[in-house]
Structures are given as structure tokens and as C-alpha cells.
Image (cartoon, rainbow, N blue to C red; front, top):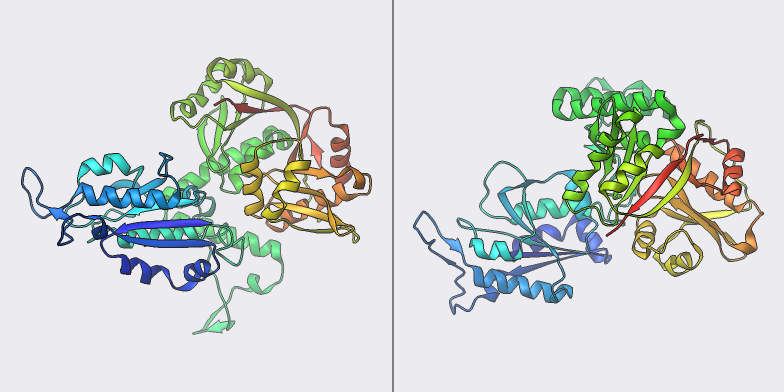
Amino acid sequence: MMNFYVMTLFPEMIRQGMRTSILGRAAENGILSVEALDIRDYTENKHKKVDDYPYGGGAGMLMQAPPVFACHQAVLEKTGAADGKTVRTIYLTPQGKPFRQKMAAELAKEENLIFLCGHYEGIDERVLEEIVTDYVSIGDYVLTGGELPAMVMMDAIARLVPGVLHNGLSADFETFHNDLLEYPQYSRPEEWHGKRVPDVLLSGDHRKVEEWRLEQSVRRTGKNRPDLYEKYQRKQQYIRFLLKKGKALYIDIIENLRRGKGEIVEASEAGILVKDEAAKVCMIAVFDESRADEVAGWVLPEKDEGKKAGWQLVVHQECLLAPLKEIIPMESCLPVYQAVYTQRTAVPLPKNVEICVLGTEYLEEVMAHYGMTDDREYMEERLQSGNLFGAFAEGGLAGFAGIHAEGSLGMLEVYEKYRRQGIGRALEAFLINRHLSMGYTPYGNVVEGNGGSLELQGKLGLCVSKQLLYWVTLKA
């Protein structure tokens, strides 16, 4: 559940703005909550005064530190974080970092968010220094207060919370997806004011529809947002290059970029480093082994930013491991092969296996059976986001498989009682077909030495890389 707390002088403005439409329904269903706190309630002034003249003179009044701080302390108590745990506290200001879709996705993972809405000429700097974690702007213009920006941010963030939107895919395929603007859309009637719906949309050919939509998105982005278009084209350049270098070996980087998840941190004729902020995964490859030390050094910014702990690094050549060990502490290094489904036709599914999405009520059972990780928080997030699927037999769960945060298929586990009955094959086939329906190329990793899994990939028609990759977990 996502909890929004808004510190404001005009709480009714927030309450009225956030109780309608999709967000209002999500609040009624217990998926999110919005609480507006009146900063005036936390002043000791008998007239509820919260502002005063600024020291040094100047136009206007300034919001005082004590009531803002007291209000923030009250919010921390509500979140259970009064013991010092950090709760993201966002101050809406034109001086802040620009609000983008990527930031919305990052903030959507938080359980609690606090918004501080300023008024007058601003807020006493001392309280901002003590409580604010993020300074954010929704644009280069000045408003009368922070309430409208707070509601803009809450709307953008809330729609990314699982369960808020009815269609789980609609948050993924829209404006700004993969650095492209959304394609034009049409509804009934087929002809209006002499303008017809494009024939391709009436053809029933899903592949042609997707090709047309991509073409339109690229064209519209080039015309309206040349900055995004340039970024998109750079990604496409490296995707084409990696396809030539080896699809099976580099499919994880290719798909991560194609799906709009990853950002190119560094890239040249020496190698490439891609960062998936949401998945906390970096993918690194060297194209010229004599430059392995140089390419390994690209990982250093992650260390400097303090984002190293808990991240994973996918290393595509063994020659990178030695120089990487010199600059980053490694907790573990798992050698894997990469398997990719290169066909566009769906895999036949057995009719006797029931497969459906699993909810968080299966967390304990999943953790008890899955031996590849003890990261409870990660598995809970996979369940919450609808990315773990179960096969059922005899009225209970017989096995499960899912989609990892960076996009690969995995987490395949079949209970011992139900092994050698085709359940593992059915689960992976289900995931392959699901990805094909979304326009993705399905791929996954197989741990070195897992002959059974390698055999399964062959039966399903996946191509396996001849070269090993290395999944490196970085130490805290």
C-alpha cells in the first residue's frame, strides 16, 4: 500500500483533488491513502500564525521552521519512522530536480512519501536542511504554492502502484516509454469529419499494428521531442551493434534497452555499460579485451554515488572480473549461460496444467521452496507486481516461475512430488508466450552445471550462448 502525506496550509485543496476518479477509487479499495496535514495545527501561536518577515529584509513573508518541523515529526510518528528511519520527504520548489517519469517509477516503490508544500516567499532554510530528502520541480515556472505540484506528482506516482490501474500493462506502454512519445490512437466511428481510421488498425494483423505504432512513435518523437529522439537513436545504434556481436550473449542488454528499462552509462568501441535503476542491475561488456581495465573503471561512478550495496552486475566477459575485483567488493559471482527464444511463434501449452498469477499470500510458500535467494523483499515485490506465476495440481501449488526485475525469465521451481510431469516446461512456455504477446524477445539464464535446465531450453527451442556470463552481487 502506498501512503501519501501532504504538509500544507490548504489541506482541503489536497483532499478534494485526490478523492476523485481512479485515485479516489484506489483509496477506497485500500491500495493507497492520502492524508493532508494542516501545518497551522502545529504552531504554538494562538492566532495560528506560521509566517514572519525574513531576516535581512526582502519582499513577502517566510514560513517559519518550528511548525513545519512539528508537523513533520507528527507524520513520522504516523509512519512508525519516528525512531530515525528515513522517509522520503519531497519539497516542491522551482529550484528542485525536474520531475520525470523515471523519478515517478522510483518513488512508486516507496511505502510512504511526504510532500511539503511551501507558500509566501518560501520556507526557513534550517528546517529544509533537517527534514527534506528530495527537492523537486514540475517545471520552470512559479506557482502560488506547492499543492498543485504535489498532486501532479502523486497522480503520476500512484498510477504506477500495482492495482491502481485496471490494466496492468497500461503504465508500461504509453508516452515516454522507451524514450518515445505515444503513437496516435483512434476509436469509433471509423470515419469522422472525413478522416478515416488508418487501415492497418482495422486489419487484425497484430504484428503490422505494432510496427505501425512504433513507426508513428518514432516519427512523432523526432518532430516534437528531438532530445528524446536522439537518445532513442543512440540506443538503437548499440542494439544493432550488439545483435551483430552475438544475440545469445547480449540479449539481456538488447532487451533491457529495447524495453526502455536501461540507460546507457558509457559506450564506445571498447565496451558498454548499461544501468537499470529500477532493477538495481548494471550490465557490462568489453568488445576489445585489451581495454578491459578501462571498461571496468566505468563501474566506479556507482560506487561514488553510494548505490553499490545490493546491486548486481552482469559481466559478459571473464577478462573483466579481475579488474572489477580491484575496484568493487564482490559478495558472490555466479557463472551462467544465456538462453534466448529467437522464434516469433508461441510454444504449445499442455491443457492439463493450470497456470495463473500468484499474489503475496503465496510469499511464505515461495520462500520455503525457492533456493536461489533468501531476499524476501525482492520476492515479495515480484509477487506484488504480478510477475510470479504458479502451476496448480491436485488443488494446490505444484511449482512456480516468474520474470525478474531486469526482464529475464527465471525463478523456476517445481515441487519434488510433481517433477518429470512437464510442469517446468509448461511454466517456461507460459512465460515465453506472455513475453511474445508483449512484443518482447524471451530470454533467461541457466546456471553452469544445471544440465536439466539446459536440456529444457533445448526442448523449448531456445538458443544457448556458448560463452559464460557472470552474475556478480556487490557487497554492502
